[in-house]
Length: 292
Image 1 (cartoon, rainbow, N blue to C red):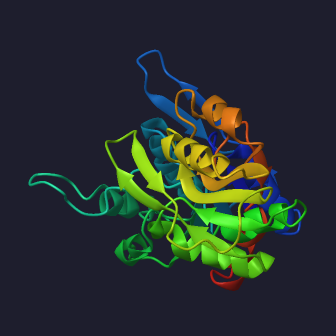
Image 2: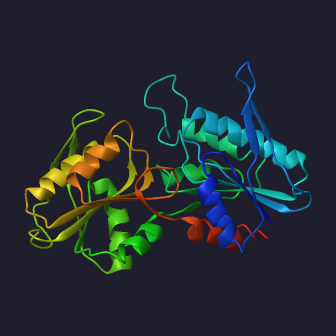
């Protein structure tokens, strides 16, 4: 089995190769022609072998690179191709909200699986997107990875910034054997929210170590407001943790200004302290897809 890391996921791909028993690891050659067209080439002898391609699709360029790499790997004679998409871009549009809109998650899923024998992703915007795939598709969770990191740090209470993240907080709380609570959220616009405490608190927050847990941090507005609310309750220390750290514009700096710690998994390259999802992805590749 060979592991190939696209330019958006080189570090994670190398970690996955180690989790797969130090499987041969390679990076493709990628360049742009003068007219802007993308060129890729995979090296090494992969004919007749299973290949794992790892590439997050945060940008349009990442998507195009992945599609071209899939074709190149097939052209090189791979026996089976498993595509790992740690961060699946365009997954938020999983249904049309206005007439004439595409279902982006569905459209991109069909392109991702075109040359694949199986697909693995991590914490989709909606797990319903898995049902769109015609090929075997599996979703890893970033929760165990973050829990492995938090187990080494003081934690008194896990906090979901809204009710939509309750199951995430509950699952992490079960792993760490810690209590949890969910804040009440009212969205004002795309970048501003209003948060309030639940009517009943699981404990006094004064002096406690609290961790705000989310799936994606993009602009950071929700995390910042949650941190301010919890600080008014005299929390002892605050940290924020997420699976996918986009940290758009100055989000990272704004969160660090109000939180003592900031953690994310390695599905995306960012300056937060990382927890790796490589063991969880490798387990799916072997157990569910039979990669060998």
